Length: 204
Picture 1 (tube, helix red, strand yellow):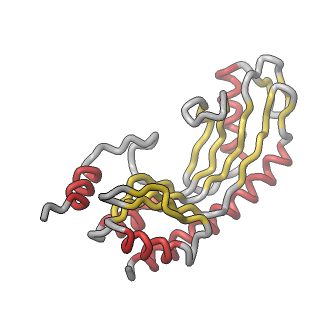
Picture 2 (cartoon, helix red, strand yellow):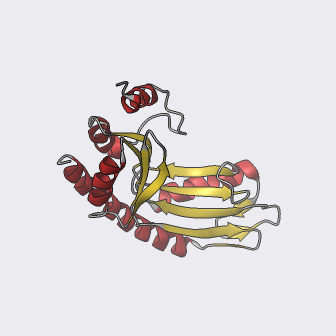
């Protein structure tokens, strides 16, 4: 009998990476490779977790400008530099805490956790990975079911998202420094969970 799942897996993993970075995050490589080494699973998308600054034109994902992105802990100096470069380029804000009326869109500071989308051969395989995932991650569930595969979404819950600038205000440096502390603390927790998850899936 023709193995449709194996064919789909082979075809998918040969595709060019279409993510913004164009390659797998370094902290996710071992997890991705481990999942993809197993005959019943393959990853369709992933992010190891990141800290970003986004200019939001709307709530749609494709209608935003990336001011800053890093898949690691950050410091105030690099956040300020990214904001200042954005300010100078767009002529919207004169200083970090001084707003010019020309600013049109909100700027968000976000710390995003690890997220994985995994295709599973069947319901049994999906249930096995789902039970393993829920030992570590609170947010894990089935998001797609077809005759040929089950798709799981696995997300950690270390997350922070807040607006830091709009046409009427901008967060001061002290507040941004506190956000960085919280984000970095979350990032470390997120990374540890990823390392623990790797050990669990090695046993599947």
